Length: 165
Image 1 (cartoon, rainbow, N blue to C red):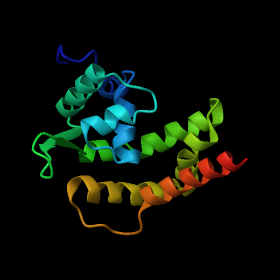
Image 2 (cartoon, helix red, strand yellow):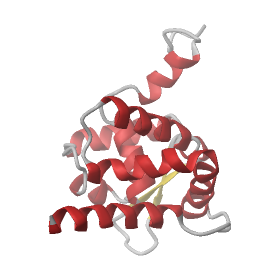
Image 3 (cartoon, rainbow, N blue to C red):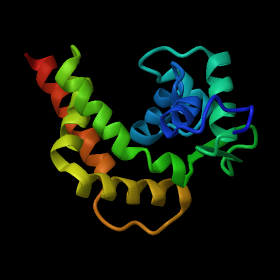
Image 4 (cartoon, rainbow, N blue to C red):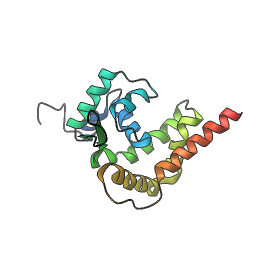
């Protein structure tokens, strides 16, 4: 076993990439919030990530092969971050984490509606979402209706319902 890893255990190796306080949240925001620029990831973070932490996590996620960075063709001084296939392949993990959190933690209705829909939609919805992410991040052809849009519309509906109450 290489000295750079604590062990060859698949759970340990996954935690070495995703087990810090922020990496999964950065990936979540890219995946569900379509945040692809540093400024969007920084300013729209629900949890309030610091700029130095965000910069460090983006570097770590790139080094681990979870995301890529490219110059943004619309703006010379901006970079655009994209999920790789390895990052997209985390959708089922996110769905399971969201389902567990809904069952065992004090979630808010607004922030758990996407997890509820993913849990109810199961693997077929996860696959459709992964196909959509491949289209958005890897340039693959779009295969069906937008799962991300449906999740966002459900979120906005809950926000509007709770604001009216």
